[in-house]
Image (tube, rainbow, N blue to C red; front, side, top):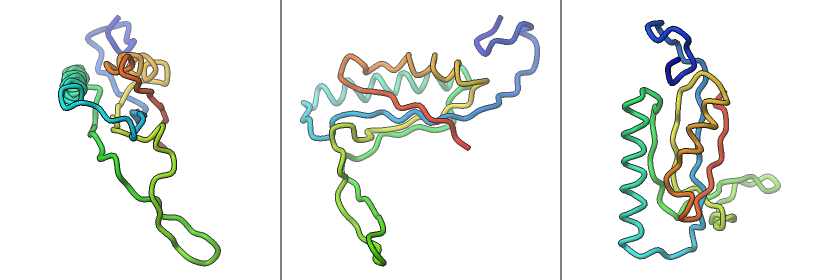
Length: 124
């Protein structure tokens, strides 16, 4: 059986579902330059691994500061991010056979020990 669950490894596999993995982290936590470089290297290596397996479609880190744009009454307003404790530090978009496979990929995140959390959501 191959990585995607195909019985016949020579069969042509058509992936069926895309998921986004949000990397949630505390955006107010100040990390040392060495720690940030380690995190970046871990994610670059993970991305390469996913790319080699033909799973990843896209992925990037995100700047910690961003804006919320929302409607209040009859006006469109802007404000700073409200939830910085579980802010989004980056994302991966993966293309896999099903949710079970996406969960297995999410479990591989290399930065859980550094406090990161993965939010997994299917893309419509």
